Image 1 (cartoon, rainbow, N blue to C red):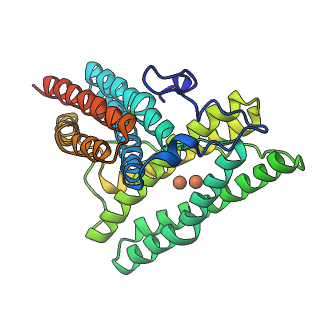
Image 2: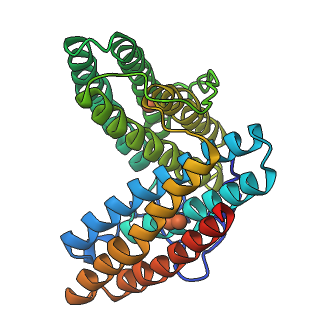
Length: 311
Ligand SMILES: [Fe+2]
Ligand SMILES: [Fe+2]
Ligand SMILES: [Fe+2]
Ligand SMILES: [Fe+2]
């Protein structure tokens, strides 16, 4: 697990203003910076958050596979790159997007996300998987839907404790650690595969978001809330995303994982981030444009490092 302690430190390029908002009577930081951004830039930042969260989660799984195959240097490269995706790229995008607010605002955001996953997304995915004969995936989606309902309840109780002082913040859930060895997809329908992909990206972002919310809760002096966010973040990554990754065949041999990483990094470096930078520049969002440009440069270096490991 990558340490998130760096999230509490001010980034060299983007001030950690949103992360530093105290939990008490501070202004709900969603947020002067975010409000000033063009809607298109905010959309591109949202895409960035999903992409970086998924890269972070995938690289940690690829690192574990490299270790299993006896390639510790490649494992180390995947882990250090995962760290950059989360603690630099995602963190800076989160600050620009005003993702982190007060503890109450963060809980409301978490409740909204859990509600959507519990009531809408996972039920639809389960029904579709059942229709398509992917029964293992259907069962997993249904199980996760139930978990998300429990996450929502815990966050609701925590919100009451934070806003009214009534009751206490619930204890964090226990994560069932699911190993993700190299393997082919275990589902047959293209629709199930696509839904697994959407679900994994949602879980990766939920994990990253809750770790940011936990860092803020700890900074604001609410250790119990920090533990609730951290424990829930672990369930999202090590149980939900991991279970989906097994069915999706996300992890392959280290050679294939390196190829996947090179392709993804090159695409980000040459197409995605330069495009976002150009759009941000065109609408006058210069800080965001600078972030997208710098990030494109980082991704080009990641692509080169993975290519070198492959060679
Ligand atoms: Fe990145
Ligand atoms: Fe959840
Ligand atoms: Fe989840
Ligand atoms: Fe990268």
